[in-house]
Length: 477
Image (cartoon, rainbow, N blue to C red; front, side, top):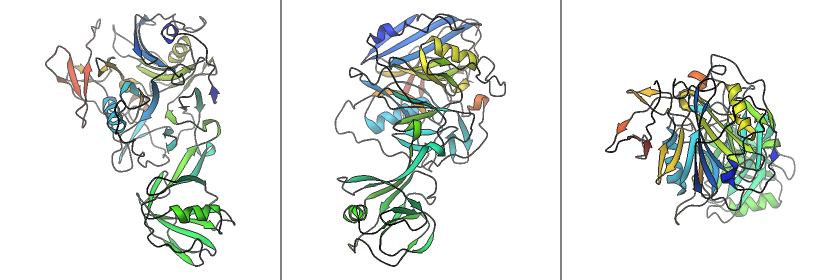
């Protein structure tokens, strides 16, 4: 359900102490560590007891506030084949910084994921920069959308609440339009626009016709990015046939009208023409959507029927990652360590929902957990691994590779002359596949390299980015 947060006055630093309404089965929480990160963001660490020792890490920020210097995004690394590269959260953060010039203040893992021949893929729906990159295949799973302006949505994002449109941008970037698509692979009505993705030769009289070269041979999995190769002026409309070959699609506008004339003036060689799926319905306007499993809270009500399965660790204590929003518009990203007796045992998903309620999250989603749970925070201008992931390699607790990550980032780049982020790569609409790993986590373990200091250093694969491990003393582990 989409919700416009009610903005209440108050200081965010004090807000981390105003937790819940006291009715939750979760224990009352008081942070043992808080850190004002500046720019409206606050980090908090909670050390508490609930069926054993628990360690919780949170970052809170209201991106809709005029005083806020940060906003939340969801990001991934392309594998160069139209899919997702299995990547450490540190890799994903470094890739975002390199592409945008905007620093990452904090980061966690994102959606559950599944292994595929082309890499890994998110299990649930995924929207980045307002474009649907994946549609979830499992009706019992959910996702969380946000626009950084106080609007959120939670539930199912599928074919029923998305819409496919055509984006066209002139070669010099001076003109751009988004067009509704009235028909696929058939002649449109007068004044209508059709897109042909089937190969073959088609005849449409009295129409504007443009054949576009696509980046991928598969033009039925959206987004499809294409480039015009038009070099001749021709006429606004014409009679006759056109041919669509493999790796191409065609744009057809019936009649001499405003749309056909705009395309005639702007769809020259080098212009971009993309077939894009957008979120609609209650997810309309959501710039980012991250997939998860259970809805933990919605409109202030806690979900009393969270999953209790043991196959995917729903009903057993485990590390948890979750994301949500408070009534005042403050968004909070949370990671709870687990599977480490004497240090932090973790919670069931039902307990995770009560914890979200205790933290004051009126709407919250369960993200991937288990060995995927990772929490990074910028300390001394370096992203630092704050939690203790449950995966072990070489006797050390190490992060796991994941498919995407939720990042708290600067709203604007620190330096000028940095190019905007490149368009996301094509990934398709998602196909049913069995999630791998406990809790559908999948992925691989990383390696630990010890630096010159007392703390070991983790080198983010393929990026040269360094993440500092904060070694924490653990009881009985």
